[in-house]
Length: 177
Image (cartoon, rainbow, N blue to C red; front, side, top):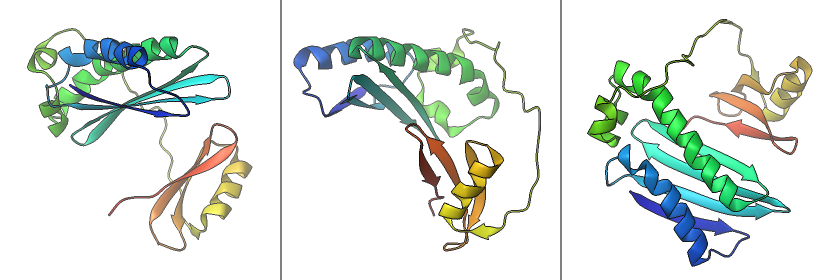
């Protein structure tokens, strides 16, 4: 695995880099040797944050962990990714997705997976999507009391999603063409 470590508002010491590499190298058993792992370490006020992103074909495996101690955040991120991989391995195999090529053969062939948290859609909803501006969609989201809102962008005529972010800010998801 190729681990790329960057820092925001933090000096990346050799010890910190080594701790990240030691912990994330435990994930080597799941991925092919050419897999890239993007790690961003940052400090905001008293919060120590690690973001780990592993792009695989057609998908992204991601973990963001926050704590008072960066080494604890590193441990948590590795654990979360490992749980995600074990949980969704069966789904990757069932759908014959191209992402399988990114994983180590021994991981794909193993029987070690967690099926206790199968994904079950318990409710489906249909609604009309009317054109509106992202700011109007945020207002609608607030009025419905949800954390996201799907709408057709009046400027681009594309389906977009607004969502609530940490810190009471909003995000906008737009499709790439």
